[in-house]
Image 1 (cartoon, rainbow, N blue to C red):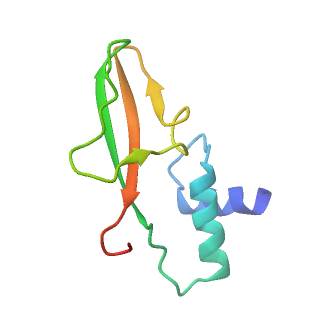
Image 2: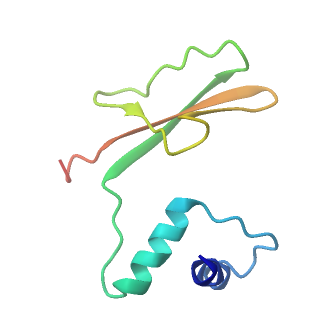
Length: 95
């Protein structure tokens, strides 16, 4: 874990307080193991937002969207004046 955090610090030198996400650490670890391979995410991601405590959590336009449970708190986040829901679906070229 310490080696991955050091690698993240080298990748993001302008960050004063580094708190890498698990996905960022996984990508850095992948690059360390397979330096010639390009990391391609198989998911298309989107965010919808609405007013605080009145958000209906509608998915983005289109079909195949599912809640992205890896982001936020089980796929959503509440801020001071709004809420956001996080969504993902498989890329058409990866299905």
